[in-house]
Image (tube, rainbow, N blue to C red; front, top):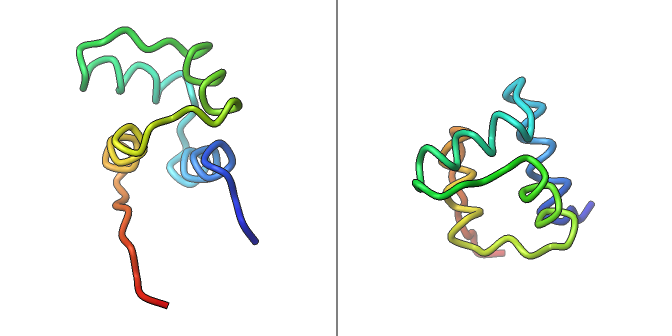
Length: 70
């Protein structure tokens, strides 16, 4: 099953017992930029999260993104 970034991040948050609000706060702390729950939710739904942001989100949640050959 193919998942978009919104669904994938929400699955990872659930696995970690966390939520979008906590993730937005951690992103703000890590980057020094204001990241609100609403802004993050909107960007996830719209599919406008950049790859470097996905890497940072994965790191914050204790995961890593890697490519594997088929």
